[in-house]
Image (cartoon, rainbow, N blue to C red; front, side, top):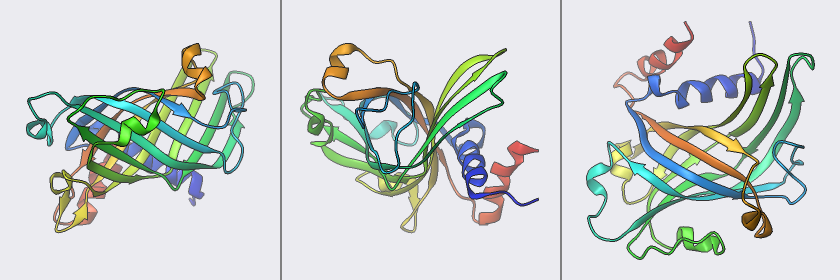
Length: 231
């Protein structure tokens, strides 16, 4: 059976984001951050348009293996930024009787994590989330955001992306011979945000974790671990 590119992207992101496939589950826990985006988009009352941009800013709430010994003891803050994403696809789905899905794909962006010895992150000044030392960077695409409302199980919100680490001061913890490990970003993306942030141009909120997969010496066996979750 052949599957289209959208199905493949959904399945692959699910596998990589799932903690069961990760060598370092919840390596980073991203506390609630807020997204700036097109003013006409109100997740999940409607959908973004093609080429609409999306940025997400927030603080790292928890640092675990393989990074925990790299966090300084003194005053500091760790922040994250999802930057330069553009909508490449959005759609409605479901059977319209028991389930309804609203889905948006964003691409061309990346996730960056910064360490700042002078805590000053302020949602009124998005630049303050990326004025520290770059410690991690990953290409992360496609960034899949969707909500599914089911007549029996209720509503769930999902955010997920396939990550490939590319740089930063901590890159040696997530790379081998210069090749970055794979990871998965998994969490929720919702539209309910404080009015004060709406007034600043924010349109949604994001909460997620980063799971990391260390490749085996034989690459197919790495993919085998991931595919095993579907059996």
